[in-house]
Image 1 (cartoon, rainbow, N blue to C red):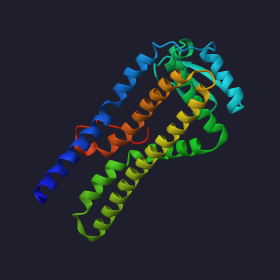
Image 2 (cartoon, rainbow, N blue to C red; image 1 turned 135 degrees about the vertical axis):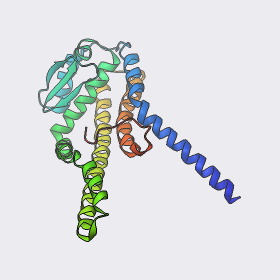
Image 3 (cartoon, one colour; image 1 turned 180 degrees about the vertical axis):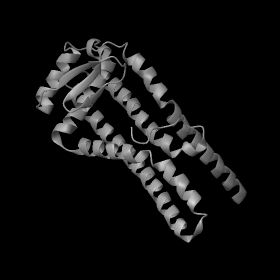
Length: 236
């Protein structure tokens, strides 16, 4: 009986690992597929994407938000009271456009009402400086473990530094997921001002698919040892 439990346990672990690898490797492709689908669904609203930015900024954020056009598709972002929106997002009144704008405005509301976004950005900047030291620290530490007592202590210290940087990267990923979820919750409040229930359900599913890409980044770091997970950036 115990042998069967072991076999079942191993199979369950392998299935879970396959599922996690699938999320890590294919969430980005799934999101782009959903983006293309949503970008072809015209929103049932009279307010344009640009006017929607002004409406949300005036009613919820209470500060003006500047729109900066960019060429990169699905490269939309928010930073320091600026919305960086692709020309497609700005000019095409699709459900994808409004969902993306609402999500980025969700970050604008976070920025205006607290310092969570600022803390995350500070940690990311620190991480980008330390990130290049992680693998050299780990490798050098492992080598020094075999060269005497003094070097052994230095080796342990370098390994500890590498582990600290890795844990910091995981903390940043978890904070990012939490902040993205909060921004999506804000987005749904904004979208409820202009959309009916059916459109809101579609937008919510799209935003959930987008958030899954952040979980994928987290899993890429956790599963790098498998050799079959796409490479993820520590502090992107």
